[in-house]
Length: 312
Image 1 (cartoon, rainbow, N blue to C red):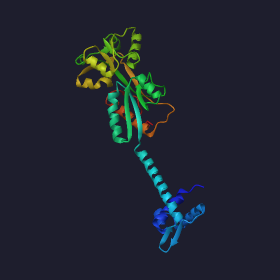
Image 2: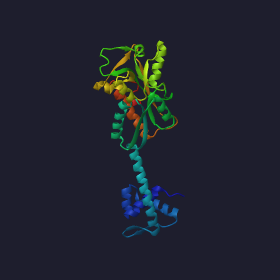
Image 3: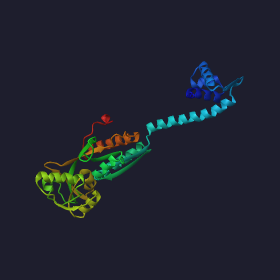
Image 4: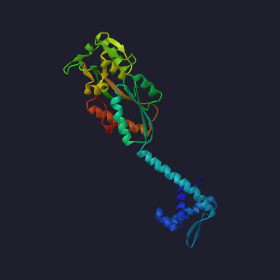
């Protein structure tokens, strides 16, 4: 029969203090109850564990053997309890977050900063990629979370925000009062990614709707390279607001929102299915949602999230 941990804890305290009376006081257990527990433990083991002397209680040789093991076991249990409580307060573990390349600069830094401040024991890795690569990474569980396009994500994904698309040109390309419709933008000399990318797919659909051909002068993979080509005067491009906001603010690029109708794309949060998230993943997800809401309030996009109190 397995030893009773409660009896072992009582025995260790009595042996360490050398007194039933002092042990009773520290444990908050009546002395007769302690004596009853000790008799039961000795009967279970078939050996005397304690000797009563005029100066108190002394562990027998068998008692000393049990005490050394009991102390190690109880110390390990206390450490396990402390570690479990610490995990509840400060979750640990690896979390992989994938973010669509065009919005990664906007989202990643505030998420990293908040996570580092609140949960320093979480090892957060952020990777940027296109929507197809992110979908594959979620399917193969390379990423625990991914912010990607709704047209590529699984049906179980959760909507985050709608982002307005902008025509982007070199500095000074557009006057503040310039307007461009979606149909007009299709004829501009555009630098776009290949057909596997979300914005390209969206624009191809718009071209079909208007019965027009996209005027693609160059195909470039990568948002940073595309913006560099635009700055060099090699053409214009179409990007979400998040991808061009910083350059628009510092004047290195100019951008205007598409109008009549405005063109938006929806970003969602994708996660592996049938794979319960760890505590660390849950906390990073909460931070991500809070950042999305704050940036939405700052005008970066139209947030689709419920109140944070409603987010599980």
